[in-house]
Amino acid sequence: MVRCCSRFPQLTFFAILTLQTFLVFDSAVAQNGSDEEIKIDSSIVILNALVTDKDGAAVKNLGVDAFELHENGERQTIDFVEPQSTPFAAVILIDVSGSMEHRVSLARSAAIRFLDGIRPEDQVSIFSFHRKVEKLQDFSNSKNLRSRIFDLKARGYTALNDAIYKAALELEERNEKRRAIVVLSDGEDTRSGVSASKALKAAQRAHATIYTVDMSLMSPANTRRRQNQQVLKKFSSKTGGTFVATPGGVQLREAFAEIVKDLGVLYTVGYSSTNQSKDGKWRKISLKTAEKGFSVRTREGYYAAKKK
Image 1 (tube, rainbow, N blue to C red):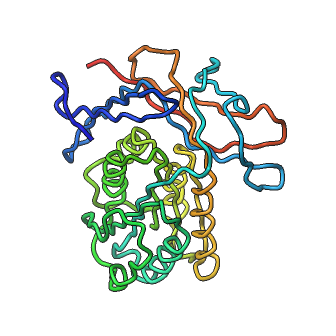
Image 2 (tube, rainbow, N blue to C red):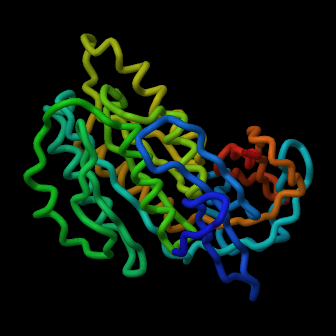
């Protein structure tokens, strides 16, 4: 990736070759630990979408004409639809803070199950996070990562937002247009230098779908569980991912197998917005299929660019 711009030193240009044309992505992001606003300036919007029939089975082989897309109620022209075979890049975030003391082993098992399902063309990176975010494995299609995550131990505070923010920056550097962040956490943030809003905007700018897995203890004494779950649910719903709450064991492993399966059947949809105003406002996206009875899951929208 080339970083250059006379006006914004950290402006990112990311060119994607598709339909025999280059589509240019421009974005500027503050990479320090402050909570300043992220500015998004993109000439094209990327959506990862899962299409299912009434029985919940993935619908395959749909083209551009099969979709209808609206932004803030206004019909948009879809530039391209890429099929399910597109490779993905994913970052797995494993919470190893003190509150995860009795769940780290389950998180390790779930991460291994995810790796067992990836295809040869997919790339996965793994981070752990407590009071700081640590890279355990750079992007690879290797499934032999057990030694790198086997000795993870719970300790310290929780920097959940920082972890998601870091994962988004890592994914923004990738060539794959299908990108995902998989979070295994109890959802409680006690240490981050950035807000949940900034972390979410970074993920949206990176066109990343967030899948969150609630690892909190299912105990009557855990009074903060519902509040923490809402945090995880927001990350997933705003980016078109899913939230999973499982007691662990077989259910947790099956949940992770389902996540990696979803990533293999997503469509990648791109369009150029007819609204060129740089007002920094939230724009709501509605993506549907012309065929009745199909359901589409994708991110809810994005923040437009904002003039400096």
